[in-house]
Amino acid sequence: MNVVFISPHFPPNWYLFCVRLREAGANVLGIGDAPYHDLRPELQQALSEYYRVDDMHSYDQLVRALGHLTNRHGKLDRLDSLNEYWLETEARLRTDFNIPGIKNADIARMKRKSLMKRMFERSGLRVGRGRVCRSPRAVREFIGLVGYPVVAKPDAGVGAAATYKLENDDDVRRFLAEKPAIDYILEEFLAGQLLTYDGLTNRRGEVVFGSSFYYSQGVMEAVNDDTDIWYCITRAVPPDVDAAGKAIIRAFRVRERPFHFEFFRLADGSVVPLEINVRPPGGLTVDMFNYANEFDFYREWANVVVHGRFDAALTHPYACAYVGRKDRLSYARSHEDVLREFKPLIVFDTPMSGVFARAIGDFGYILRDADEAKLVAAALAIQEKAGPATGGSAQRTALETTRTGR
Image (cartoon, rainbow, N blue to C red; front, side):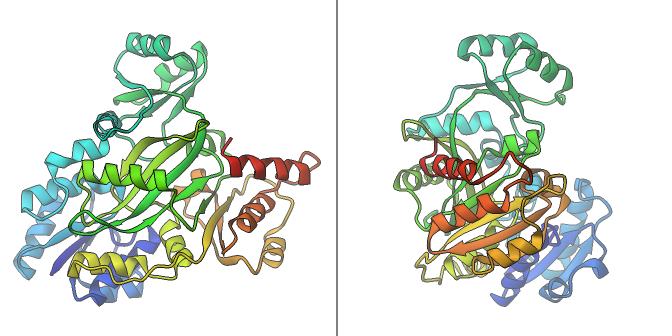
């Protein structure tokens, strides 16, 4: 099987997907803009050939690269990057070269939040009100319908970048003056706990691995307010999240793909879908899957792609948390204090790439334990700020709020 992997060097841990493909017996062909000698040795060894392009945004260069690889290796069986940024490019290349997977006809509903919302409704799921607003008048009409606050997001955007929370008329004027010249969807603001449904489907669209994590706060708030965030993978997927996630998988025909769906759990206990992503969650979450479940997600994805099977026997022995810290903030505990105090829980710590830092911090810790409450308490302690405004009572309040989702 010939598998083309686009931009195999980024994110940094994605090289493992190529390594596991090679171990599964695939002929792995890379396309990227990094010099070959800059690739880590394990990635070089995994690639049968690497075609460097000057500009990954030049579709003509990518077409020439695929033409070269086809001429050298024969029919291309799969093409992927597992990266949201290249999703549309991949679909176009798969369509033009008749490679199985997500193609041009599928891509709009998997990228545009307005179309996702329609698909959620067709699946019988409750959704928040939203509308693509292409003029100042349309913006004000929607706000008149639902009231403040509202959230404005790029309809086809990635992550929480260029996202606005509009709480008054001044915010609206600033949004209209600053926003990029792209389609924005406005949505009523939903207060609740942000949580996910993540995993992997096989070729028939069956979930062979499922997982869920919840955030300490919204990613939009962490980005816009430049504050801390942590999130925790639970040992079990909540049944209503599992049911809603599988309904979405059926509606969107997610096959032979990792997935990352986001939901809000509202005060009444219901879950409301926000958006889907047909790729793994970002940051170090894939590695957290491995720590939480004592398996190798990279290997099992490769097995699904190459052999059509999932081999791991899962028992979900641990909860697992990511805790980020930002360089600009002052913390009550030094890095050395954290390592000493929470040594039994910490399985990994590392500086984070600048691409992720605004959302999840400049430095991250991964913690695991069978007892989720221990991880939550540790996360709050690691992010405790220096100074008189913090203390045990504030931490206890935050812990209780997180547990109840208030």
